[in-house]
Image (tube, rainbow, N blue to C red):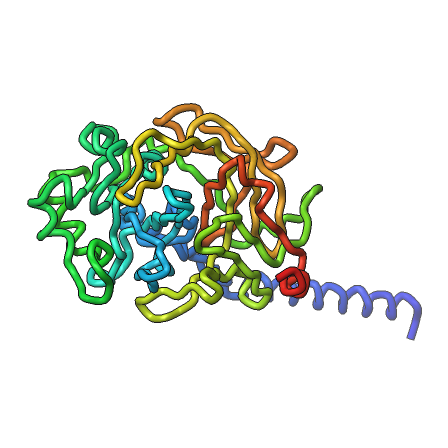
Length: 369
């Protein structure tokens, strides 16, 4: 076969193949592209102002509920603490502390809360930071005018006897007056009777800034140190927190043993602990036992500590006035980013701050006992 014939055959083959390929693509059915539909996993949800965790949007928009608790040894266990988003512990007269758990409105209607005890003015200022409805049974002489003012919406069993039988009930498990309890359903009946606003203020300033879902704050910052045990100075209940590396939470202890929630006998545990160091002084009038009431300063500025994920850092706090919220800042001046979950805030008096103790390991704590 001549060279020209071979070339002609090759050219013909190329033409045939090329034509066939072109025909394939021309005649091939068009691919149908499926639209990818994004499903928002948090549709109709919003984050709690207490915990930073997702919940039903309608619930997240409702005002939290702050309840005063006595913290005497004879009144244990308290009920509902593991269901609170934020818990405040502050000193009161006689070296005792009282607690103020603050609840989102997603708690069970009939869950027992309490005991419910009397008000001290500084707890009112703390509850106001969350636009919370404040629930108490009794009050010091210094708190009466504040409760009767328009500063906070409160449900006060002693000040308003008509609310007592609506919102509170009495048990036989503790001696009076430490046997008053309530629940969400009863509190909301009191809210309706008082005609209080049920939704958060539209311009409510958030107290906490929380980490994003997939970006926990491991406190990997300059100045952070290991802290497995936190021990505030509180003289009467002698509390401490132990870090559980498995759950990444701090477990609460006091009165020489685990602190339990009477709802299900589970140990109290939290994701964040804050020490807010504050000025304080004795007042002229005392309680029925003769101990002077104290005034604790919740406005102004000061120092403190932030604990999470087994670490701690120094912080500063600033609250301009009674209508502001306290903000917390790290040593670099950045607002601290809280981990999502429960937070326990101890207001520790500046005159006793040196008695607070911190241990890098549980073994170190046990050796120091």
